[in-house]
Image (cartoon, rainbow, N blue to C red):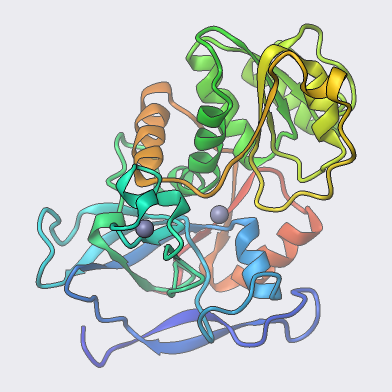
Length: 342
Ligand SMILES: [Zn+2]
Ligand SMILES: [Zn+2]
């Protein structure tokens, strides 16, 4: 594979995706050479995550010049570093956001590698999946269980895994009452697992189409984001990046209830009222990235319960258009790029 080139999208100049020529360029790059502990992966499909938009537009600081975005990659192993064991050329693998941790800090050694200060991310610190090929440290590659098609699998690798960690952080008791505030890509996957495991799910979201989807998937109720659910909640997850909803969700909790906040970004939280919002041992928790264990657990649950993402396919050659459409809200579900470059 040495000396060969491939086509890849690169963030040439971070800025608004709707302006011409836009931040992304389709360029020729050398096919990456895997490090000793890495896999070379031929990309088959790559999901489009909102974080890719933040990378392209410069909302996230540049950590690698002309980075190739994309961290929901499904592909096949095309090459192996000399120290890799347990993978073979041709294996199907998933490449996700977390691609490296130090392994020695206090967080890593207590099973909280999501908090590692030296963690590295695909499509931000290293080139990702908007390309013909990408690389991944073998220790951070997933082996997708089940026979889910590439396009259906891709969105599970970020939206799905984060939703799963948010659900764990929400500490829902078995058969409990769960409220989901916001119902996009991550929430609709999280809801499917919670329902399959016996939860009663109440969805509180702005969009009428999202409320219909929630009911179709089996939610017990679907109301506006600021409405009260029909019964008190044991746990709630805030997926909408709206701080105003924090006191709303806290008031919907039963005594001892837990609110987990799934997003990286949240608008400011208004002042909380201790008696109505926090007393009776209500808890608020944030969610930061995920561990590999979260990822393996979620992919196994998704396979067992037949979790399905609503997807919208684009050829990889039209990745810039997919990001513009994501920003404009022009499609339902998750956009997935299918490799038409090789
Ligand atoms: Zn993502
Ligand atoms: Zn660490």
